[in-house]
Length: 89
Image (cartoon, rainbow, N blue to C red; front, side, top):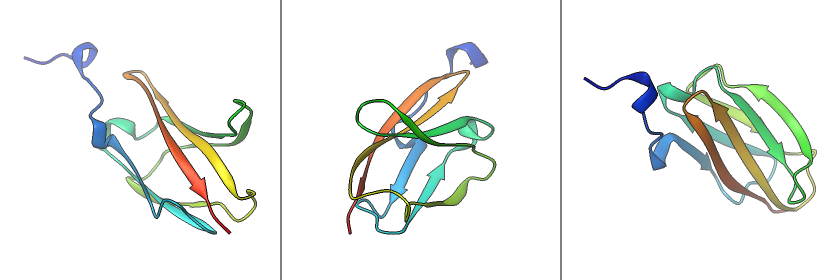
């Protein structure tokens, strides 16, 4: 049997749509990421927004972010997933 310690995060565990985004991005996660900490960071690693993932699909308001490239990072007990988020105006 597969134990929790051996669980690998699948490539499709975190999806961002649309990407590039304008004012709102829809984030979709798998069950393993529920309860995880989500962070939006600039390319220098500064945290701009943090929230707990409490639903499998939710909207991320991006209207306060300047146009550019950001990192969306989700930290869980299983590991870390980082995706690129592009904001276009």
